[in-house]
Length: 130
Image (cartoon, rainbow, N blue to C red):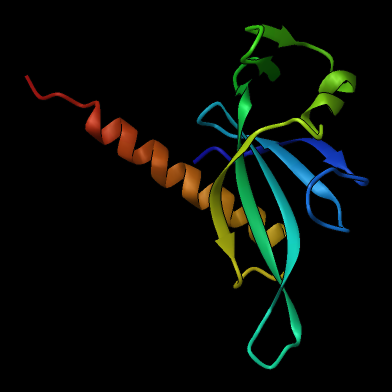
């Protein structure tokens, strides 16, 4: 199992959270973001859940360690330009939400679990016996 690589950390983010957002390049060549947000339980007390979303505008070349802008199809070599990941126009697709994870590390472990399961299913489905 290949773990996702942390590629950018946004302390002031455009995402709906007062906390930081962590961007990861997955071994499936997708870009994911993990952030916290609040939700209210029936008694009105706010609780924290972790959200994992997948970028629709960027991919990540896991082998070459570079971000790829899908709109221009250009590679972004220098991590100092990864700031574009955290943009008010950036489009994300919901991937997973967890109310079980209590830390960013636990949310990252869930991301690794989900992406490794997904990779495993892709490898199994692409296997064609002769």
